Length: 367
Image 1 (tube, rainbow, N blue to C red):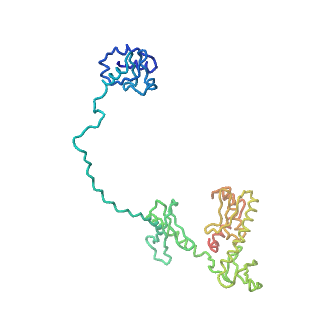
Image 2 (cartoon, rainbow, N blue to C red):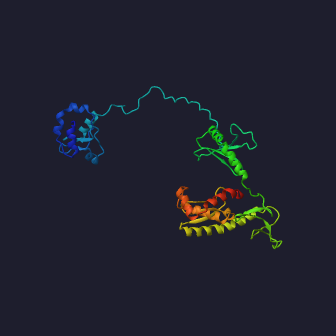
Image 3 (cartoon, rainbow, N blue to C red):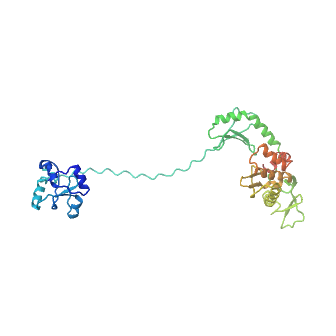
């Protein structure tokens, strides 16, 4: 046996034969100190072959370095003798013996079963807190002491005080605002609120229930609802000026029936007039819709869609045209800058009179 040196290992790894005489130069003593495993494959011409050659002939590997050593003129019995010298002592590969019989470990008592966990019941959604109805500080002692409805809005950025059509004042609190600041804001604007209430009381109000004889705003004028005397008894009708409207019956409230007639007229007249004015002004319009808007007379989008309130058929023609011009000019200027109002003045010189009429008479239509 001989120790394979590292430099020799590199030569063996390159499949170069190495003379055995060079390997025996280190002596038998060094070889006995190493844990080497000798292959039973007989050597050829006294060379050391790589382990992969020995593996192809017989499954035997050298444990030290991964090489098989072939010894010249050594028979199988001598190899077995050398192999036995390096064999481990008896019992090395056996488990340690014990003089005590194996005793199984004592079994631990099983823990008591945990009580079953009841399924979690889904929590019902919490209702949104109702808006606070508070009186500003200090409260007024007059008959028109304003009651303020405080509402929080996540979209609002500033405190705001508005007066609804039903006479209720609403104070809007922004998302990061506080009720204390809202109270202070309301107290600072109590004078404005009183003036707004006074203006609201002076505005004309339309009748809530429409019956024959009730005055209704139609085509810009207050006209009384009259019975159509020539209508047959089974097909009653009413007159508003020179226009005739069929109704189901003459007793009771006629408002829902007449407003349905007004909306049908609006869906025919308003788009046709819008297309006509758009052609005259050269403004491209993609679509015209008629809606039941409660807070505005019209609106438009940057995509060319104009929406109009059906109640415009109850206003004068000049006011109706002003609203249409207003929305058409918004398709050129999406703002209310001086340049926008200059464009409105070019196409509708009497727009100020139309604005004044809407402010004075819009309450007759609920706006």
